[in-house]
Image (tube, rainbow, N blue to C red; front, top):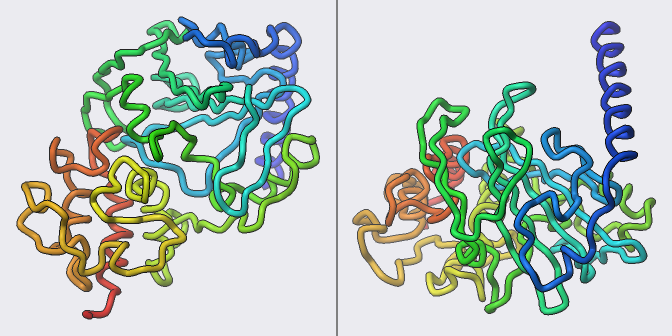
Length: 338
């Protein structure tokens, strides 16, 4: 144990030295690239990283993690926030942090570990004076730069589960379909309820956040709870993976489903709710959720499929999240028949 602790401490010191060295020689983040009207052709033009290949952030670019991350074909995600000098984030209950104009959210998708890690794409959300702009960037084979991919793209790869898939980089309009609410593009990830209270406290201490929000750390991490009631775990999963579309004003609001964490109406959550339009996506089932019968529930039928036209979510999915489906299945099984 002492040897492991010593090795971990030594590794931390080495990483700290690498970060410090990279930041000393790195250009500053370009506020013009973020807030301007154009679409930079390469990720490097923003200056978000002191070392892009190693994902070492530049000054004022802060890494963060989510308690329950959105699942995307098993990809690892490296997340960062940039807040311009003289500004700060603002708390808004347990919901989304409020970002000043000129801020950015950066998310890199990767597969593999250590020397075998492969960066696939980096998506950026830029908060400009006229609202948020979402842009996808695709990493080159040499892992030296990512180029703007307005039209999206496809990459053949193998997931950590060993499945061969055609990974989809979304085009600019598809970014809007997930990040859209009431016709505007918004962030969907950094909600206070899905962020560590410790991390939020560190942001306050640095002056990057006005206060630790109420409701921080509210979402349980369903991946670490093998026992106990499944309801809060499944609800957390659905909030993160589905509710950005399935909520009032979201891209799938016409379904009548509202899968947000704060929703407590059983019918809005899909329990004994008939679909708005029955089709092949319903799989011959009558209700979004049929208590006690996961195999008779449309919600799980669509989660358990990777077939276009049936699979949910519709985007960012070429394979099935078996573990996520299992916790939703357990929740439905635990429901009492109405």
